[in-house]
Length: 443
Image (cartoon, rainbow, N blue to C red; front, top):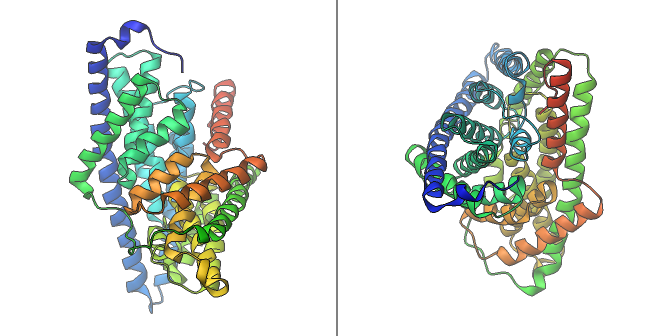
């Protein structure tokens, strides 16, 4: 982003601008907080229906058809009403912040909100953070237009709303601000930093009234790391790097297959939703965003074979869910995969070299940060996010080492960050839409 005129950085103007960013944060906090509550209610409803209907003749068809209908409706809203609301939303926000694509229309927010509730409520393996980031960015657009801000300030307010969205999605205000500065803006410029951190903090405060201030995950007390455990930690970093590269390629490959398919978007989404309904009937813990799976991994318990099976199934489900062309994010599914990689390495290490293997729960936490770093290439955000999500700080040193290795592996294999790949895709789709006047491809 080019810098604004010097006059806009005068103390009085800067204060007004920061206050505007605070309003963006407050609006985002209220929106994202209500979104979290509605998603929780939808998950509870799906799980309750599944439990109550077992043993009945109608239970399975009702669940499968219900999930199919909800996912198809979410895809229809995106495909026919607002194509910009598709997918995570973070790539779209990144394109706007970089000035590579236009801000978009007001209808993005309601379509994202309703579509996200439908698709994630149906059990798709998607996260709430992407929609919250895009909806927060859209609130930034609204505020910029309402206060008649220029192009630079509009992009800063979009970034501020995105930070507030991530902060409220995960109860992680520092990670929200740092992610936007590290991944979207890619610079720590005074005006942008003040606005982003202010919006993130304000959004977190407002959301606290709705959803509370507890950490998303709870961990048992962990021993301080020892230098002798470094080789096992390194294994976690290497495996996360390799799997992160494979996951990025799989996401992009799935989107290409979906683009090439002649099956109508709504029908394809309905079939995917039906598949998730079927999986949810027999294995209800495998569907949805997966926060409960991450929490299980962070307890450090489980059988190695089961952990590996969950890891493989969730990787497939995450890729398939993202190809459904409905609103939903990638963060939460990444946390599941990273935590299960760390847990698997920990369980294997305890069986083979118990004297130099850290607690599996600790390795699960390290895996969360390392896998996020491998896929997104934002190591500082990964470290802070894992810390804020669990309230655990004594593993920062091994987390840093594992993140460095994961990033080295991904970079050496020339795998571009997932949001960079998706942003290029979103920008190409936007340009094609303008040139051909037709709905966008995958965002």
